[in-house]
Length: 30
Image 1 (spheres, helix red, strand yellow):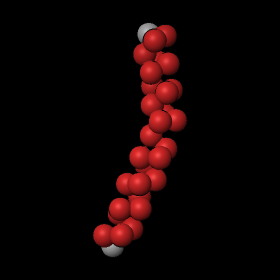
Image 2: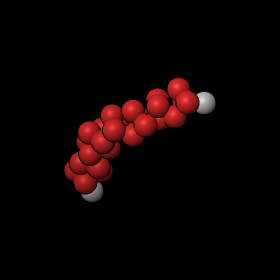
Image 3: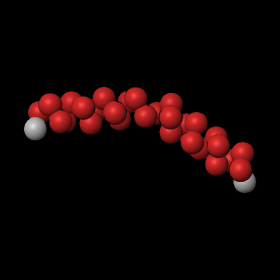
Image 4: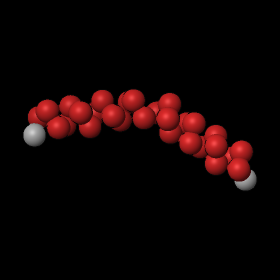
């Protein structure tokens, strides 16, 4: 179970930059 959780965390870290860019762009618009 621990390994599964770690893999999920790693995937989120990898995907983070993508949605982080969207969040930054949305903040610039607002």
